[in-house]
Length: 350
Image (cartoon, rainbow, N blue to C red):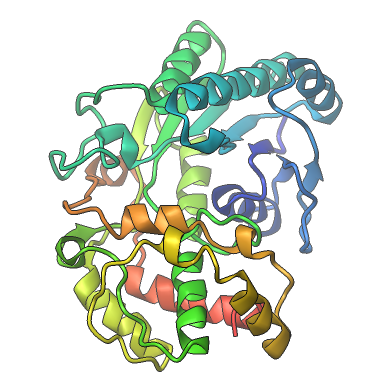
């Protein structure tokens, strides 16, 4: 097949949406994206609904949609934070997707699996930094390990291979996908402004001064296209923006961009403090004519609490991917300010 045909699982998440549109609308690939919802934007990517937990339904859907040359697996089920259930459900979803895609695709070339810095223990506590792709694993359960082990084993002896991508804190435009730090900050700022409050950093004093990293969804999409077609196979790549920052510097830049007083940091639980702010968000939407995104779908406050209370440096080495040939970098400060502008332009925030 001369024309690449990508299957993107998790097609409306912050990774999948930006990847599908990059491949289809910028690179001219044929793209089939799987999502539980229909897209609310124009794209030449074809979206289909398939329950990846249902092996038979997935098989039927992909048999009709294929054949594919590449699979990009970015689907995820949170399972209420139950780590053991996360392992079972997310590994089964990957198996169902890849097994069906392979069956429908005699010319399958590569499967890309997305993980993250949790692979190195970023969710547990301080870990050796910068983290390298061959660093030892941490104590399971962690569904990344089970997914990677299954995919590695399943790919053995096949005509296709697999590549693992490890971004961290992916930020981009994706309505209805709350696991997006840029959206957490933007909505938190809108609520603070509505209540007449400074834009105080809500995390810990320790985190405020630690080194952090993020990954622009556009950077990840470009790196994924490279990894699918040019990178050596059967390997793993960290992919972040390539820079690092401290919140005590970046937070003030974001506040200035929004013309807000950053005040002094004050540690709060966003999950607790935002629990009753639904009516405030409804008032903001009505006042400014915003897109009707439900409050429980606009921002993942628990995710914000996790990121803003990492009392340790979070840094991944990107040496391997640069030496392999993908040397593109992104400016994290410019990324946050660009995304805030985009959220405003698309009437997601005032």
